[in-house]
Image (cartoon, rainbow, N blue to C red; front, side):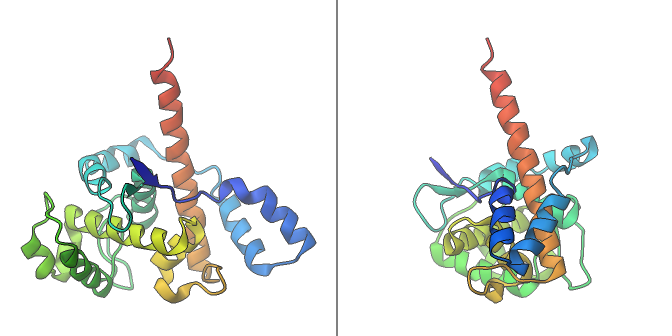
Length: 217
Protein backbone atom coordinates (compact mmCIF):
# COMPACT_ATOMS: atom_id res chain seq x y z
CA UNK A 1 0.00 0.00 0.00
CA UNK A 2 1.54 3.30 -1.06
CA UNK A 3 0.79 6.52 0.78
CA UNK A 4 0.64 9.79 -1.11
CA UNK A 5 3.69 11.36 0.45
CA UNK A 6 3.15 15.08 0.77
CA UNK A 7 6.78 16.15 0.71
CA UNK A 8 7.92 18.07 3.78
CA UNK A 9 9.86 21.17 2.82
CA UNK A 10 11.76 21.53 6.07
CA UNK A 11 14.41 19.16 4.69
CA UNK A 12 14.95 21.42 1.68
CA UNK A 13 15.95 24.46 3.71
CA UNK A 14 19.68 24.09 3.08
CA UNK A 15 19.13 23.91 -0.66
CA UNK A 16 16.75 26.86 -0.48
CA UNK A 17 19.37 28.90 1.36
CA UNK A 18 22.07 28.04 -1.18
CA UNK A 19 19.89 28.72 -4.20
CA UNK A 20 18.65 31.98 -2.68
CA UNK A 21 22.22 33.16 -2.17
CA UNK A 22 23.33 32.24 -5.67
CA UNK A 23 20.13 33.05 -7.53
CA UNK A 24 18.09 35.58 -5.56
CA UNK A 25 14.45 34.49 -5.52
CA UNK A 26 12.11 36.55 -3.31
CA UNK A 27 9.46 33.81 -3.38
CA UNK A 28 11.89 31.13 -2.12
CA UNK A 29 13.25 33.49 0.52
CA UNK A 30 9.74 34.31 1.78
CA UNK A 31 8.78 30.64 1.98
CA UNK A 32 11.99 29.76 3.83
CA UNK A 33 11.17 32.41 6.44
CA UNK A 34 7.81 30.84 7.28
CA UNK A 35 9.12 27.26 7.22
CA UNK A 36 11.83 28.28 9.68
CA UNK A 37 9.26 30.05 11.87
CA UNK A 38 7.44 26.80 12.59
CA UNK A 39 10.40 24.43 12.51
CA UNK A 40 10.22 23.69 16.25
CA UNK A 41 6.45 23.70 16.63
CA UNK A 42 5.11 21.35 19.31
CA UNK A 43 1.75 19.68 19.90
CA UNK A 44 0.35 19.87 23.41
CA UNK A 45 -1.22 17.02 25.34
CA UNK A 46 -4.59 18.78 25.03
CA UNK A 47 -4.23 19.09 21.26
CA UNK A 48 -3.37 15.39 20.98
CA UNK A 49 -6.40 14.56 23.13
CA UNK A 50 -8.71 16.56 20.87
CA UNK A 51 -7.25 15.00 17.74
CA UNK A 52 -7.63 11.49 19.14
CA UNK A 53 -11.42 11.86 18.99
CA UNK A 54 -11.16 11.82 15.20
CA UNK A 55 -8.50 9.11 14.77
CA UNK A 56 -11.01 6.54 13.52
CA UNK A 57 -12.31 8.95 10.87
CA UNK A 58 -8.85 10.06 9.76
CA UNK A 59 -7.62 6.46 9.41
CA UNK A 60 -10.77 5.36 7.60
CA UNK A 61 -11.00 8.17 5.04
CA UNK A 62 -7.23 8.09 4.45
CA UNK A 63 -7.60 4.44 3.42
CA UNK A 64 -9.15 5.32 0.04
CA UNK A 65 -7.32 5.80 -3.26
CA UNK A 66 -9.27 8.62 -4.87
CA UNK A 67 -7.05 9.35 -7.88
CA UNK A 68 -4.38 6.67 -8.29
CA UNK A 69 -4.50 2.99 -7.29
CA UNK A 70 -2.72 2.31 -3.97
CA UNK A 71 -1.96 6.03 -3.49
CA UNK A 72 -3.52 7.21 -0.25
CA UNK A 73 -3.35 10.42 1.75
CA UNK A 74 -0.99 10.35 4.71
CA UNK A 75 -3.06 10.55 7.93
CA UNK A 76 -0.30 12.56 9.62
CA UNK A 77 -0.82 15.28 7.03
CA UNK A 78 -4.55 15.40 7.78
CA UNK A 79 -3.77 15.70 11.49
CA UNK A 80 -1.38 18.56 10.72
CA UNK A 81 -4.01 20.26 8.56
CA UNK A 82 -6.67 19.97 11.27
CA UNK A 83 -4.43 21.57 13.90
CA UNK A 84 -3.28 24.33 11.57
CA UNK A 85 -6.83 25.13 10.46
CA UNK A 86 -9.01 24.81 13.55
CA UNK A 87 -6.89 23.53 16.43
CA UNK A 88 -9.18 20.47 16.28
CA UNK A 89 -12.36 22.47 16.96
CA UNK A 90 -15.21 20.99 14.85
CA UNK A 91 -17.32 24.16 15.32
CA UNK A 92 -14.62 26.55 14.10
CA UNK A 93 -15.68 29.19 11.58
CA UNK A 94 -13.42 31.70 9.84
CA UNK A 95 -14.15 35.27 8.80
CA UNK A 96 -14.30 33.90 5.22
CA UNK A 97 -17.06 31.49 6.26
CA UNK A 98 -14.86 28.39 6.14
CA UNK A 99 -16.21 25.76 8.51
CA UNK A 100 -15.25 22.82 10.63
CA UNK A 101 -12.09 20.89 11.46
CA UNK A 102 -10.27 21.62 8.21
CA UNK A 103 -12.04 24.91 7.43
CA UNK A 104 -13.82 24.14 4.17
CA UNK A 105 -15.75 26.81 2.29
CA UNK A 106 -19.22 25.59 1.28
CA UNK A 107 -18.77 26.06 -2.48
CA UNK A 108 -15.56 24.02 -2.40
CA UNK A 109 -17.13 21.33 -0.23
CA UNK A 110 -20.21 21.15 -2.44
CA UNK A 111 -18.10 20.62 -5.58
CA UNK A 112 -15.98 17.99 -3.83
CA UNK A 113 -19.17 16.18 -2.76
CA UNK A 114 -20.41 16.17 -6.37
CA UNK A 115 -17.09 14.78 -7.57
CA UNK A 116 -17.15 12.07 -4.92
CA UNK A 117 -20.65 11.01 -5.97
CA UNK A 118 -19.35 10.39 -9.51
CA UNK A 119 -16.80 7.94 -8.13
CA UNK A 120 -19.65 5.82 -6.77
CA UNK A 121 -17.87 4.91 -3.53
CA UNK A 122 -19.93 3.79 -0.56
CA UNK A 123 -18.59 5.22 2.69
CA UNK A 124 -19.19 4.45 6.31
CA UNK A 125 -20.11 7.47 8.45
CA UNK A 126 -21.20 9.62 5.45
CA UNK A 127 -24.14 8.58 3.29
CA UNK A 128 -24.62 9.15 -0.41
CA UNK A 129 -27.72 11.15 0.48
CA UNK A 130 -25.64 13.45 2.70
CA UNK A 131 -23.18 14.13 -0.12
CA UNK A 132 -25.97 14.68 -2.66
CA UNK A 133 -27.76 17.16 -0.41
CA UNK A 134 -24.77 18.77 1.32
CA UNK A 135 -25.73 21.81 3.40
CA UNK A 136 -23.36 24.46 4.80
CA UNK A 137 -23.94 23.23 8.36
CA UNK A 138 -22.87 19.69 7.34
CA UNK A 139 -19.30 20.98 7.21
CA UNK A 140 -19.37 21.04 11.03
CA UNK A 141 -19.88 17.27 10.98
CA UNK A 142 -16.38 15.78 11.56
CA UNK A 143 -17.01 12.78 9.30
CA UNK A 144 -18.18 14.93 6.37
CA UNK A 145 -15.42 17.47 6.89
CA UNK A 146 -12.61 14.90 7.07
CA UNK A 147 -13.91 12.96 4.06
CA UNK A 148 -14.01 16.10 1.90
CA UNK A 149 -10.57 17.14 3.16
CA UNK A 150 -9.05 13.75 2.31
CA UNK A 151 -10.55 13.88 -1.16
CA UNK A 152 -9.37 17.44 -1.84
CA UNK A 153 -5.86 16.81 -0.50
CA UNK A 154 -5.63 13.68 -2.67
CA UNK A 155 -6.67 15.82 -5.64
CA UNK A 156 -4.07 18.53 -4.95
CA UNK A 157 -1.42 15.87 -4.33
CA UNK A 158 -2.21 14.36 -7.71
CA UNK A 159 -2.10 17.75 -9.43
CA UNK A 160 1.14 18.93 -7.79
CA UNK A 161 3.10 15.71 -7.36
CA UNK A 162 2.90 15.82 -3.57
CA UNK A 163 4.78 19.12 -3.14
CA UNK A 164 3.62 20.38 0.21
CA UNK A 165 3.96 24.09 -0.53
CA UNK A 166 1.81 23.77 -3.66
CA UNK A 167 -0.72 21.45 -2.02
CA UNK A 168 -1.25 23.86 0.88
CA UNK A 169 -1.34 26.85 -1.46
CA UNK A 170 -4.12 25.16 -3.46
CA UNK A 171 -5.93 24.42 -0.21
CA UNK A 172 -5.56 27.88 1.31
CA UNK A 173 -5.61 30.23 -1.67
CA UNK A 174 -7.47 28.16 -4.26
CA UNK A 175 -6.67 25.64 -6.98
CA UNK A 176 -5.52 28.34 -9.37
CA UNK A 177 -3.23 30.15 -6.94
CA UNK A 178 -0.09 28.35 -8.18
CA UNK A 179 1.89 30.30 -10.77
CA UNK A 180 5.09 29.03 -12.41
CA UNK A 181 5.17 26.09 -9.98
CA UNK A 182 5.32 28.43 -6.99
CA UNK A 183 2.79 28.88 -4.17
CA UNK A 184 0.67 32.01 -3.82
CA UNK A 185 2.77 34.81 -2.35
CA UNK A 186 0.23 35.90 0.24
CA UNK A 187 1.43 36.26 3.81
CA UNK A 188 -1.49 34.16 5.06
CA UNK A 189 -0.75 31.35 2.60
CA UNK A 190 3.01 31.30 3.26
CA UNK A 191 2.37 31.29 7.00
CA UNK A 192 -0.06 28.43 6.54
CA UNK A 193 2.44 26.42 4.51
CA UNK A 194 5.01 26.82 7.29
CA UNK A 195 2.54 25.87 9.99
CA UNK A 196 1.17 22.76 8.26
CA UNK A 197 4.70 21.68 7.40
CA UNK A 198 5.81 22.15 11.01
CA UNK A 199 2.97 20.05 12.40
CA UNK A 200 3.49 17.41 9.69
CA UNK A 201 7.18 17.09 10.57
CA UNK A 202 6.24 16.83 14.27
CA UNK A 203 3.79 13.97 13.65
CA UNK A 204 6.14 12.14 11.28
CA UNK A 205 8.98 12.35 13.80
CA UNK A 206 6.72 11.18 16.60
CA UNK A 207 5.50 8.23 14.53
CA UNK A 208 9.03 7.23 13.52
CA UNK A 209 10.17 7.46 17.12
CA UNK A 210 7.30 5.21 18.15
CA UNK A 211 8.25 2.70 15.46
CA UNK A 212 11.83 2.56 16.74
CA UNK A 213 10.59 1.83 20.26
CA UNK A 214 8.14 -0.77 18.96
CA UNK A 215 10.94 -2.81 17.39
CA UNK A 216 13.43 -2.46 20.22
CA UNK A 217 14.35 -5.81 21.76
